[in-house]
Length: 429
Image 1 (tube, rainbow, N blue to C red):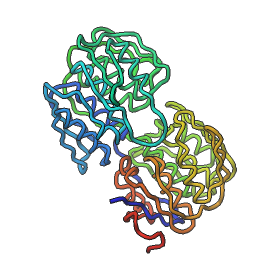
Image 2: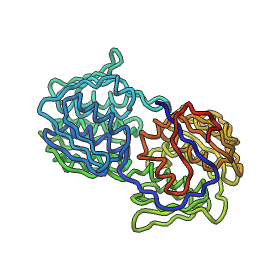
Image 3: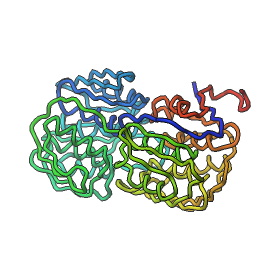
Image 4: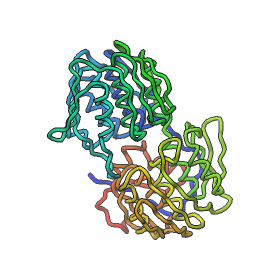
């Protein structure tokens, strides 16, 4: 059944918002478990729909997966013999499925992974993944909608330079190279905390890795890895969501479990715009109760720059901030779908190529809107909180993929957000 959120405007969010493990790390770490025979346990795993999808994908590869959303644990029992085909049925719903590519080629010498689907935020080409695996000695091609990689004689170390610091390509080349013969150097890699988290888990499994978090990673191949227990790194995008929620609603939120160091660019921008930022013993706090914050320019960049996943929240913030600002999207060409929905709520925003010019208005106006991806959906809920009247946000299945019990967390901060069937009348109380 399709559901939506009914959001009542006028909230100033105050209180605590807890952040657990990162979606963008947990899913990849589940794939990393394929590299070692035996039982691997992940803790601090978020209770989200995407973990359920990844668990089913791994089960179809032969892994026994037990996911306890209440405890935040995933236990993966990986057998000696595993499958190598990730079917379209699941992969189309979860772009992170491509992360099984590297581990499968390394473990069993072949992988058939359906070309991913997922969020409607633009092209995410697989050329960098393929080029990296080919440099390691694999043969890669696309046939019948599947990316097929084979390495019957195993992989060998190589010197690789990515044309762009792609997170996904960095992950697949890294996970493939840990079992390759010899030494691999990967230049121009992604530096995200999630990459460091993957490297940390691999090292705990017996991999030899240097340089994670810098632009060059060096991997000395080993013969085999061992299962491990690992806690997923804190979700910086969820933490950033609550930071912008506080700023946009002129509220005051302590983000418990958030790591301010992982959000240097967005938190610095919010502070320069007039918000109060404080690092606390449990995370960090964002307060914007004193005055209407100022709009600020945003240009998305690879980490440690402003994250593309927080761009929809910057748009929502600028829509009601004081002044005008430019938001520039440098990573995904179709990530401005949020703009059309914000315009339905009365935002003054114009798209010009990969730029959006916003002119802040004091208050938006409630209306039905549609989320196109995880972050767009959450940003539209925040927009509904700074709108007059009710806002209906359809497509909440997107939000469920990235945020555990999002409406409950909102209500705990003083918002009036409820879940209802998507076929209820707009004016139904």
